[in-house]
Image 1: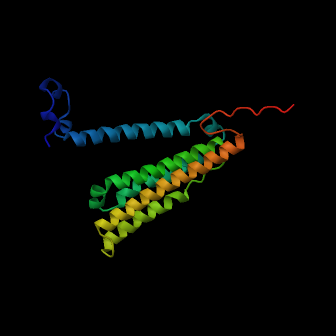
Image 2 (image 1 turned 45 degrees about the horizontal axis):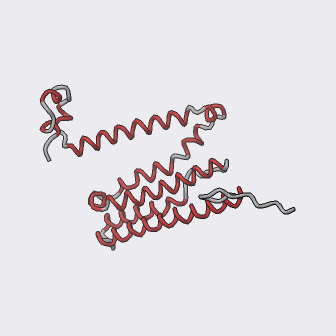
Image 3 (image 1 turned 120 degrees about the vertical axis):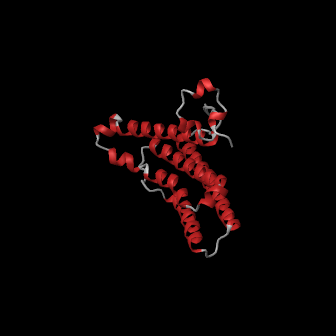
Length: 194
């Protein structure tokens, strides 16, 4: 792939630092994505830590503790060997996305119901176990090969898809029963008996 500087007009490239011009387009895009993510993460932390309720009740540690599990989920793939990250990016991203979606859904439901939400979520343990299994096995060359890695990560994706759908179904059923409503339609009032 050619450097970014080869793709830009000379008039534009004179204003861009040479370190950026020598980057490939994909590396430039990844750098912009990382910078944007960092800005959003810092903005979100600032918003959470400076929330009126959090400040008034001195709950900063409690608010930050809810981010432990998502943080560990996000950094866990970087413990894997480089060839797993390169070859199984799709399965890693899908399993991480399903797990994050599941935890986000739980967090929203629990906060709406004003229930406590654990800092370390047990739902993340299968994900971490698979990451640790692959990492330790590849370090010691025991059992796993690329095919087995793909099968294990695929099974993890299926597991989290099942958990997400199962928990959603149960939560929706409980909410509908508790509020005496239908999920996707308006409940018509029962006719009054005379």
